[in-house]
Amino acid sequence: MECLIAYCRAGFEGECAAELQAQTTEQGLAGYARAKPGTGYVVFTLYEKGAAQQFTDRISLLDLVFARQLFVSSGLLKDLPITDRVTPIAAALESQCEQFSEIWVETADTNESKALLTFCRKFSKPLRSMLEQRGKVDPGNATAPRAHVFFLSSVAAYPGISSPSHSSPWFMGIPRLRCPANAPSRATLKLEEAWQVFLTPKQRQERLQPGMQAVDLGAAPGGWTWQFVRRGIRVTAVDNGALAPSLMESGLVEHRQADAFRYAPRHFADWMVCDMVEQPRRVAQLAAQWLAQGWCRQCIFNLKLPMKKRYHEVQICTALMAETLSRAGIPYELSFKQLYHDREEVTGYLRRKDKRYQSKALSPKKKTTVQ
Image (cartoon, rainbow, N blue to C red; front, side, top):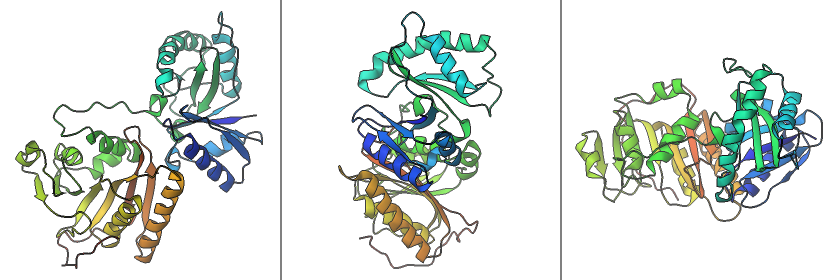
């Protein structure tokens, strides 16, 4: 039977499996998950032939919170002969598709799999060579499926395919970002990754223009503020703590020492961002309030999840935000993703869908406290 292979952060296999179960059930598809804690992946088997491909054709990877990558496999190849592992894997790939845009030989993102990743890199060369000789690889065909080979060990692998438009564009589903030497903290990579995950290159160009206005709630020491400053965007950094001196020297940052939950802006902001250690429901309500009050166009925020019922907590936060925004009559788009640079948290992107921008000068409003 066909199955779905989903990569995820080690320790979140249960959440990834529960989400796949909920999403497939919503589409009227039947199946079951196998998820071993700490392995960094989930295998979801569907009973009906063609159902796995049908599911991936209907869903975007952004519709899944905990899956970093998703592809369709024809099943596990076990006891691969050490003398020739290439031939059976190539045959399994060819049975799924006639041509591929690229070939990725991968493994799980765990400490135990680091040595296996070296093997994957070496194995990719003979596999690619065989498929190229057979005319199965066309890098110029952007619409052709991508081939995946997911090794569990050197003699066991799941071969499969994904659609480039419905899967992660990064090897193993991980964007490789380097922390800039002059950034105030490594947390800066969370916002950089969020923009790459939630926005297309064209959207990043349109929505991150010099001269825009941003508000960073809980800004200290300034890792997220730094991302705006490097793009020439003015920032109101709200935090009782100190910011990195280099940010203040930029001339683009106004530091407001205030409680992020009580702060009310004087001017409309293109962006509000928030990365605070707070209860997830409280942060979710705060983000929804900023759109409902007409204080900003879009938000990126992190929800620090509890140890148990983490997927359930994301669902609750989604429902709370929907209620607030629906009551305010705000059309919106909302996505959550557990990013590579996240830990026990997920990142949300919330944006008004209408094209009406608020006036740059806001009417005085009574400051409200998010409970």
